[in-house]
Length: 103
Image 1 (tube, rainbow, N blue to C red):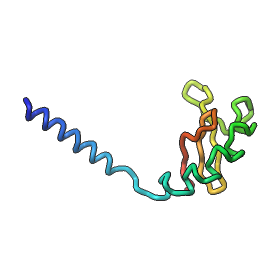
Image 2 (cartoon, rainbow, N blue to C red):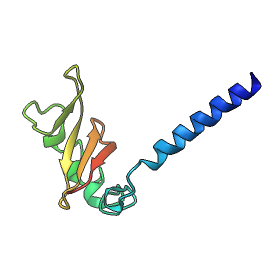
Image 3 (tube, rainbow, N blue to C red):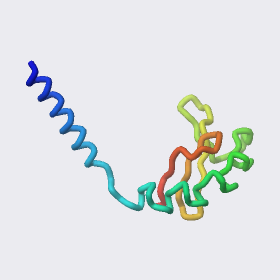
């Protein structure tokens, strides 16, 4: 029984390592690339274009076309596009929660 449990953990570890190697290693898509980084002013919430204080990004603007919604139809954030083509996703408070690199 002791060997069976050990074999089970080794098999799980092997599957985990196999999935870890399947991740893309493209620098253009990496958050370490300055073009995608939050340290780049064009992607920063400190930039007025990305700020929730900008009326175009405000949840109070019912005509905004850049809102991001959950499956229930509730607004959870907004999307902006930087001058470099990176799409940034922010929550309603202006915190950057994700990005999509330029193609």
